[in-house]
Image (tube, rainbow, N blue to C red):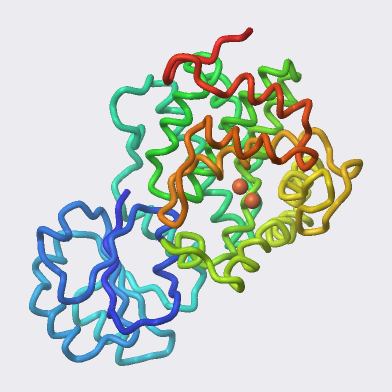
Length: 361
Ligand SMILES: [Fe+2]
Ligand SMILES: [Fe+2]
């Protein structure tokens, strides 16, 4: 599903529209950019009328015919009679108040948009892979939605998605999964899908029980849930973060724990994965600088997968490392990460022949 978000360029603060980009591929357009060609790929159009000037409204009226071909939602300021009247006069059937929860808006967009395709994956992936990608992606969206709307985290569905993911990791191999998740529109969601796949695959290679494999896979899906509290402008910033932004991003482990700490549907080991996945065994991690004896094996495993994913992912502000370059960086982490786990991970993850199935030794 794709949204086109039309808003004035003078808006300098994060709005409810920015959060939509986490859930849908979104094109941000100015009022002067409205044209059938620019709107062509959208399933739903959202127009932010807050602070729209006379010129913006004039452009909207002039291009009304182009907009009417799509389901569309107007964002207005609550209690602002003029904006509400303008939205009605422009033929918007759906109005969302700017201060209302983003979850309500996400649900509305989903209701109005085209039904979810079987898979957003390009050709070349197996059907089970496409289905697992679709299911785990949807679970991830729903978990983030639950975190921002204060509704129950869909734990059963995340376990179901983890089960399907483990099955395709066995049939198609982890490298096919890593290739698939690179296509996700959201770098944040793509990363969580990647960590989930790496964790499930690695635990399976280590011979852990099925339920342990499921737990770290589902834990990988959930581990960065706290990022739902960090503005997308920071998470997806194309430049290097400043110190304040870096501190804010580092808070995501605490935010994640705050989101799930009272949720009885999430078990304690999964809570530890969320809270402690940036802790390092020599005490140099965050948020607490825990010592090694406080960090469980499951957390250690997710940490290794998380580090590898972060080093190899493509982000505008940093160099993308190849698997071998990432392993060279992790080799220097020495006592920070569990060396027994890491040595095995290293021997398994490097592709032997391009993107083939990793063979058991
Ligand atoms: Fe994290
Ligand atoms: Fe992460």
